[in-house]
Length: 620
Ligand code: F6R
Image 1 (cartoon, rainbow, N blue to C red):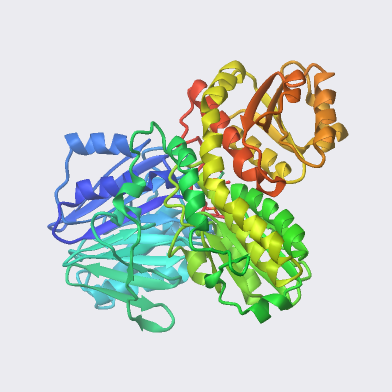
Image 2 (cartoon, rainbow, N blue to C red):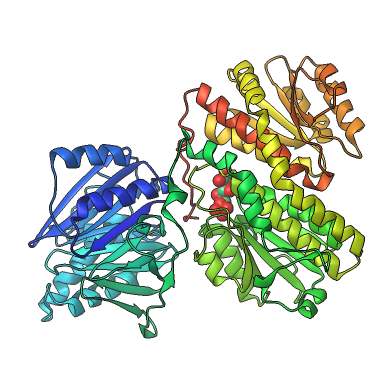
């Protein structure tokens, strides 16, 4: 939700900011803008629409300078217009800011500032912070401060932050304080890139790739001053902080599109590799278990656990639901998967034997972070299953498991889902082998997991068939997705993929549950996608399919290769390799990802940048 970039140093900053915004565009693409400070002049260019539009404006109206901030917006307050685009100027242009987050008390502050004579040019919550900074600067100058003095500017920032309620990642420049970018964080991520005589600021590490590998993650309540001569960080309550420099693992090629037309397609096709990465080094055939080094809990601690709570949002929640089934089947530990947005305000009974896992690709989802913090506050061990190294959730959890899937850029999550399910399978094996799971059973699971990258490669061979099915069905406006047991979460995920990128109404249901209401929707115009690989209750799902056919509903089946019987009931069949039931989500999700992708393309939708969505949901 909104991407921020900033830079001070010796490079020409305009192109650098635009490149950074391109890389952060997955966080929001309602508008983009930059402010550059050069020889005491603050210049702003901003525009509703994509970063490409901003780049066009900068070609005809370039700005010189070596210090600047930039922003790509996901609108919260105020429509996607030029006026609401960031950066926003405060007062008479003494200060420029970019903001990611939500200022909850903006209405009160706006009224106060309006009464003081400040004129608002936008409907955003951010502009109040800009004017408040300008107002506090004016007051500090009256008290003897100087606009060019960094101590005065820091005092102004502190006075302003004291008044703000809500969340923010801020990039700030004072017109009269040259070569300086100030950053402040409360709830929205910021990372600082450390170079030689130059510093970078960004919402995540992707804009830094290719420029520096050394980064400092800003924590909540920290304020950083970036100047070519050095970096200073202060915690608002505890004072000076020694910058803890981390080395970035990400390599440049990770964020290249390569030969693919879209990130989503690239990421779907990366899954044999990403599942391999999730497994690598984590299987112990000798002990018939998995290796979970990062949990930071002893076997004794884990043996005490009598309940697991998995918390997540969206696709990660769907992976969590598969996790619930896996953990209960393999480890026999009662497990619940909770929507993080609900858990953060609910107060379910949890004892000191309850272990909490936050599942998140980005590691920045505001609700997941809040749920994790709430559980941590209550004293529960909190762990993360996370993709983004160094993200807030990865840093705040007591331990966890990384996905190692590489950056996921496509707004619709694909490879993160299969990696999360893989890691949850490893976790279930680990906890299972600590309890009653036998050595041979553990060995069997290890062998099956090792085969998964190959099985996923084979699954991807369904691509042509999916294209054919997409072509036949892309004009339909309502879909049902149905599956049972391990394939119920897959049905939910398939429906989510379709609706988020093609804007088609789709509902996921347990296949037998549809008799209790949704079947009323079935007619010739409502196709049902059945996730129906072989398994214990296969005949029951076939009966559910017959019920749909009896009502003239078109049926698309995701079935196991060799299952020719299903073709007699379903109108179209997409075959996937035959795997154990608990591994079926890893293969069955893939044709559904491809189906959503092709349907969206055929409907002319922007697959990597679906409307109203952003990759990283850092607002509540
Ligand atoms: C759907 C999608 C979202 C995310 C959700 C959680 O394709 O991408 O539903 O899964 O916003 O995001 P993370 O996993 O980053 O916490």
